Image (cartoon, rainbow, N blue to C red; front, side, top):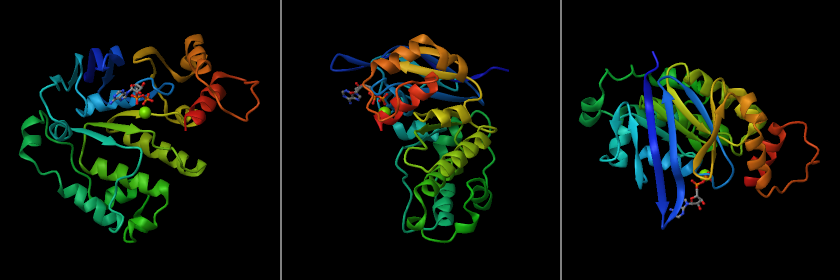
Length: 271
Ligand code: ADP
Ligand code: MG
């Protein structure tokens, strides 16, 4: 079964005539984990803004579970099952992880959601299960402001999962994390991918290598430049050119073994 959870056709988004997204086509299978990469300004954030309803398409359409999202407001789209993780964690710092997760679990009893779920909503995980999933059982009752940056990121991912979204959109989850936290974040996303459809936007190429099991999509100038598995993408001459074309500020030795190094440097340069 290859049912599509997300189908995007001929999508164009103009800001005063500038096309941040330009005739973009994209689709995601139900249950798929997709990584999206692309140089600064490629349109990645705008792409997520369109799916969540923050920005409306100038042309083209987005279908989520077969439904055209154009008429729906951002909060309605969230209630239909689209969850977004922003780059900066948004958790209640004066509450504990357990309390944050309890709020997230209780905040979604909504008629609208029930109406729009074709199938019964995914069985909700308990707070204890969520704490285990995100590796914070041992810190469940301390104030969230005492957590490390990485732990706050995991807590926010847990809060998203608590709302039982069908599609998880994750924007640069490892920016500013230690290597160890980065690896743990990858493992967390891979375990969530067993039961969710997920789109991850990312620059850190080691991290992309860790989590990209299937297709990677490269965005450039508002369109899909290429798609393929990690190895295919990092070998693609068009991808190399796009990343070389952007100004790269780095102290690294420029004799690069492969595109992954190059992509990583470009990603770091972007910050
Ligand atoms: P990325 O996340 O890949 O770096 P963005 O989606 O943030 O790229 O931006 C794509 C392009 O659209 C950039 O050139 C950016 O300056 C432009 N852009 C994004 N949002 C707006 C806006 N609200 N108004 C005008 N231009 C915008
Ligand atoms: Mg961005």
